[in-house]
Every structure is written in C-alpha cells, then in structure tokens.
Image (cartoon, rainbow over the protein chains, first blue to last red):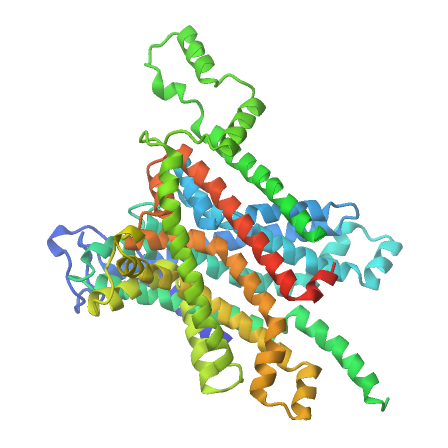
Length: 275
Length: 312
C-alpha cells in the first residue's frame, strides 16, 4: 500500500514539474473541451488547464512541504525542550491545546481578514493548528525514551542535554516524526485547497487546485471538464498521500494496543497454571 | 468529578490565550485607524485628539482588557458594513448548528454499521469500506460537497442545488435544504470514525476475555455486540468531540458551496471583506464552542468507560 502511494505522489510531482505553469490568458481560446492540442482543455480565460492543474499540484505540495518543515522543526524543538530537567511540560501542553481550539481554516480566515490573504499567512495558520498534536506526540515519545536506563547512565557519565538529544533521543523518535510528517503533509494539502477554494489561500494568478475548482463552479454544467479534471487530480493526490499515511498506522501497532497486549501476555502465562 | 472541574477550569484559560493571540494580531496588523480616518493634512494636535477620543492612546493592557470584557459582556459592536454583530451571529448560528447536528447523526448512522459489517479482516466488506474510507477522508470537504451536488442535485434532482430554507418554511423543505451539506460533513467525519471504531473493535476482539467467551460457546455476534462494543464506545465519543473543530472549519467550505447563511460563510465574508471586528468575534466564539464540545465529549467518555477515570 505504501509503495502504491509513493508511486502516485511521485508521478504527480513529476507531472507538476514537467507541465506546470500559470497558463497564458488567451481570450480567443476560451472554454475549449479537451482535445489534441489542449489535452485538458482551457478555462474561461483561455488558459491551458493542463498547465494550471500541474502548476496547482506543485504549488499545493510546496505549501504543504513548508508546513511540514515547520512542523518537523517544532517537533524537534519540543522534543529537545522536553529533555531539559525543569521544563514545564504540563503548562506548555495546556497552552498548545488551547491553540487546537481554533480550527485551522477559521484561523487562516482570521489572519486573512487582518491584511488580506497571503501565502505565508496560510502556512502559519495551518502549522499552528498542528502544533498541539505534534507537541503531544513529541513529548510522549521523548518521555518514554528518557525513562530508559541508558539515559540516566549517560547523564552520570557527564553527557550534556544536547548530546543526549542527538545520539539517544533522535534515533528513537525519528520514526514517529516521519509518520507525523506524512499525516501533516496530507492535512496541509487538504487545508490549502480548501482555503484557496474560499479565496483566502494561494493568491490570484497563481494556480491552485482549490481556486481552479472555485473558478470552475459557475461553468459546472457547460464545461464539466473544468471541474472533473482538477477534482480527479486532487482526489488522486489525496489518496496517494492517504495510502502512505495509512500504511504507517496499520503496520506499526499503536502504542496503547501493544502495551495492553504485553500486560495481557504476562497474565495469560500465569493464569495458565503451567509456568 | 475533580477531573471534570479541572477540565472546566481549562476553558477560561484557553479563552484567555486565544483572546490574547487574537488581540495581538489585531493590534499588530491594523496599526492605527487614524491613518485611514483623518485627512492627510491633519495637524498633530487633531491626530492626538482623535486618538484620545477613540481610546487608541491607552496602554496596551487596558485596551486588551476592554476587548476581553466587551467580548464576555456580549458587547460585540458593529461589523465593517455597520450591522450589529450579535444580531448577525444570532441569525446564523442556528443554521450552522442544525447542519452540524444532522451531520453528526448521519455520520453515526453510516460509520457504526460499516464498522460492524467490516470487522472481519480480509473480507470483501473490509476491503470496500477501508478503500472508501481512505478515498473519502483524503478529499477536502468542498470536493465531497461538489460531488454530492453534481450527483444528487444536478443529475438526480432529488435535492436543491443551493439555498437555505428555515424551519418556518416547513420541515421537509428545511431538511431538504440542509441534507446535502450535512451529508458532505458527515461523509468526512464518518470515514475517520469508522476506521478508528473498527480498529478498536478488532483490538477488543483479540483480548483474552473475547477468546474466553468464544471458547465458552457464545456466538460471534454476541461477543461483538456485547463484549467488544462497550470498550470501544469512548473512542467514538472522543473522535466525535475532536471533530467538532473540523466541523466548524468544514462548514465554512460547505456553506459556501451550498450558499447557506451560517457562521462559516459569515467568517469567509469577514475574511474577504477585511472585517476584523466580525472575524475576531467569530474566532473566539469558535474556540469557545470547540472547547465546550471537547469538554462534553471527554466527560461522556469518562462516564461510559470507568477505566478512564482511574487512569490518572
């Protein structure tokens, strides 16, 4: 399942790099259905849908990549802070949780209302809405490693916090950070397309799958390819990313389940009466 | 009980943090409205007088407490277009709430049976429902909504394409106007709900008590419904509670697609119209609503599953 997802996403990335562009306005060529010269047809301003769709995929992935980058950085910072002895974990968790109370889209809309929609505003809003989950995961994973004996041993020998972080904590949490990064990426792609659809995401001439779909709405019946094609591409992108994200959660038993099973294993042996 | 009070006390704290962030954003961004209102050649004295009259020269903390207390008091002021904010929100809130409530109901009706039907691994039902859940949950809400419009409203003509009919216009027309938007939100939520509920059911089925029950001769169905369900219920409640935030955000998209006069579309209008007064109120209201729903969900989950209470 993971391989299928990676193949889909990689080919979409390639597609966007090869064909991507803003599309030239050509009012003589408006609303042409898909044909040989224009494989995806043109929109109501005569721009090539192929170029715009491919460009939209690229821009959406770029925005999502930025969000994911911020999230991973935040996760690393939070994890390091968690290793420091007197860090107020509960307080920071509570503060992060209160950020979760505002939905990412609402937050992005609010930031747009201040001084107009913008790329960085959208990225910041989407990143902030994930901070709570990222912090929580980083803390729980880091804490479970910190309670291991080799950490105490390292500190006794004189290792500083940074050394402990790089050599002991990081390898342990890397897997979980990657899992979360994929999930954040998917969520960011969806959030970005929704915001662009509403008009508060990627600004005007630059294409985004959401804004292409929003522009195509009035022509839903007369030019169905304008909706069908970007919608299929968006669906494909989302499904590919979901397959990757989902493959992680299926193959890796969630911590709660594994913990329960471990306990259960012990009691099973003793209740057997055999050992 | 103590946990409930502790969680309840978190809500004002959350609101404080959210309102502080909102206020900081407001003061940083809008700068000083005197630049817009006053004519360009106004003298410094006139500018100072204007600022004093609007209370703009007060220290930041004072302005923040004004902001906070007027929000709590319900003194929300006027929007950029001059309409009373409280009245606007008052007329739009029921729309969003009714769509969300119906969406919740529909999602339960879809997710729970689907989870039970596909509990057995490697069955056809498993493949179909998992595939459908992944596909739907990877679509943004507006895409789901547009597909629904194309299928049910345009092609089949069973539901209106857009527009809102309040209850006063009749129960059936009202339900007809909110059914598709609710279905869009419900599909989004139910895919996640089904996956998580089913995973919990499967985990419970592999517990020793389930195997003991099977060895004792209880039917598979009985074990599933009576034994495995109860521990899985809290997950149902918790996921639903967390989705409250998603519903609010999603309703912005859904209300735009279906032209419903709800909070979501109001927020979009505020964003596009640079209406900071309106949007800041909506942001804080959203935070409040999400916090309350989360509180209700966690309390309900604690009531259902006593083990959660002991797990300090």
